[in-house]
Structure formats: C-alpha cells, structure tokens
Amino acid sequence: MADDAAVEDYPTEIEDNLNDFDSSLSSVQNMVQTLVSVSRSDRLLKLDPLEQAKLDLMSAYALNSMFWMYLVTQGVNPKDHPIKQELERIRTYMNKVKEITDRRKAAHIDKEAASRFVRNALWDADDKKRKDKTEHQQKGKHTKFTWS
Image (spheres, rainbow, N blue to C red):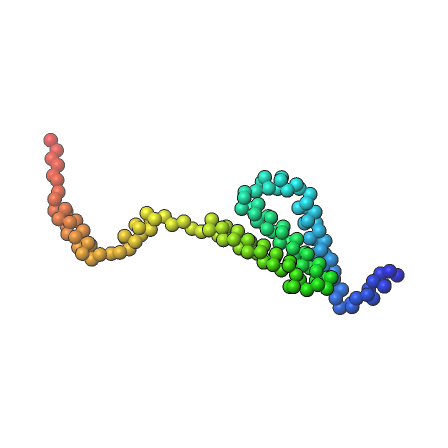
C-alpha cells in the first residue's frame, strides 16, 4: 500500500528517469565508498605528483558538482552561488594539468636529424655537377695489380 502512495506522488512518465537516476546515484555511492575505503596516503604513495594532482582535482570537482546538484534540489540557483566560481577555479587547474600532460606527450625534435633532412632536401644543381665531375674523374684512375 505504501508503494501505491509513492507511485502517485510523481507522474508515471518520469519513472524511467527516476530509476536511471537511482541507479546512477548507487553507482556514485559505490565509487565514493571505494575511494574512501583506502587511505589517502596509501593512494598517493602509488602515484607520481602529476597523477596526485589529477586525483585531487577530480575529487574536488566531483564533490563540488554534487554540491551543485544538491543546491538545485533545494531550489537554490547555483549560478548565483559561490560554488560556480569554485568549479571554474578547479576547471582552470584541470586545464593547467592537461597542458602539462600534453607537453609531456608532445614529440621532441631531434635537431641533428632535422638538420640532416633539411640539408639533404635542399638540392643544389651546381653541387650535383661538382660531385658528378669528381666521380667521373675518379673512374679513369684504376690501380693495376700484378700477380707475381
């Protein structure tokens, strides 16, 4: 009977959306419990400083996003709340970390190899004639070996 009363509290058209929301909320709860079950120091020992920063930023962003959703459920406009500036600040730091990560992944230029490519790509007709002439002159000079 309590189930019948609960069904009548909201329109039946949104029942699928509510079920999806409930399963998503359960998933978030499981992830948070997994994250909280391991001590922070144990987690950070296994990560390099850049990965630590990513984890901290992700955690801060997730918590602030959940607070944003809480404000919405309470009828508060989060766009007028300081949480908006906090999320923007975290996003700024996330972009900085992304730039650092991208710089690490960027290809490094081998200057010596690049100079060889450029030198060989720049073909000089006069230089080619000089090489051909030198090779032609060397062809006529053979050393004879005699068997004794």
